[in-house]
Length: 316
Image (spheres, rainbow, N blue to C red):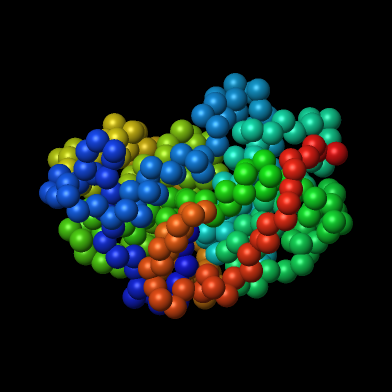
């Protein structure tokens, strides 16, 4: 996940390796263990593999995800939360929906899940978090008590096996920007544009088929202008772990997305100082490993979810 205090501070050069071959052609002996671990473990933070198929086929109601996205966007903007918070909230929602059968007869269920996902994401990422009941902004159809939201939070935590420090494309973006751009430290405009694109990929379902590192690679190539065939070959010549064909497919979708929506920033791009700075200095975290990009990271100041003893319950 991303965090930091200085726009001048970006993650150090990170390398990754597959179990059988190096991720980079130039030096297979030197591999940073943390970026390797991230790429190896990123699938743990993805929805089930059949999630997108179910959405497209109608087995899962796509409007459910759309409504959740719209509400999370509204509440996220109301409190000026950072980009990582938004990415996490939707990550939790997609993962939960992909493994848990929500009762279709209960129209309030999806709103409660969305509120709980944003609440957990805010507790994981934001320095200041409003009372949970206050997250219900606008004119929601249903207003839940704090204890009801907390019960749903615990259910989500249990279903997702407490894997809440999830990777997102933001976790990889500064690394790929640097590697594709001849190890040059990415500028603030490049990082900003990359985050805008990442946020834009979340709204629809087309990008759910890609791994987080594949989305980050495609976004980095797009913002750096590496979209011609020869440039793509050159840009990807250093990467073995990321599949070229899948990155190209993702890159094509990003080009289509920017053609349709133009170059305007996503409404969810962070505007507060806390939100802006968090994408300028990225730290790489998992449930078992943390590598800070900056020594003055605010992760130590953040409120964290204290894990109680929990047995997965049922939606009641």
